[in-house]
Image (cartoon, rainbow, N blue to C red; front, side, top):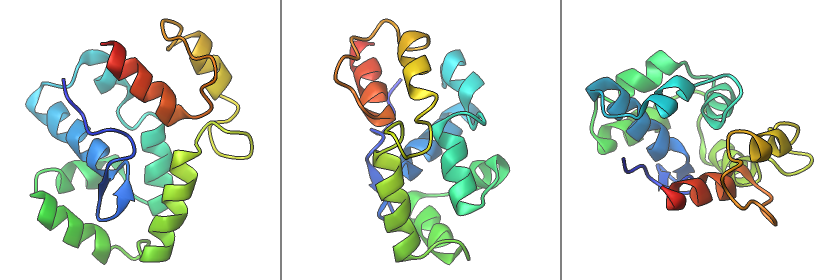
Length: 137
């Protein structure tokens, strides 16, 4: 399985290409079961993205059927999307798990449960943890 890195961008927006890739792989049956089970889960990054841009999993899955160019146009057209909102999301997203940012309360728990196989000493963000986990695969 190969997914874009958490900080990769589409339409200048982090996480969007990763979410689309997961939706595409879910549809074609190639998304691993543990990723499929967490796709758009209310406690994860997907849900943070969806809530921030007021999207539904179904909207993302429909968009994932389109080319990246068409997704970029669709995303830019959304009423909850503009360059300032994207910049705000990008700032939040790269800091997910840090004190004062979303997922801060869940981050220590994830480090000792879901990601207990990773040496997470010194890691401060969800993106760091995800990248370390996927490098270990």
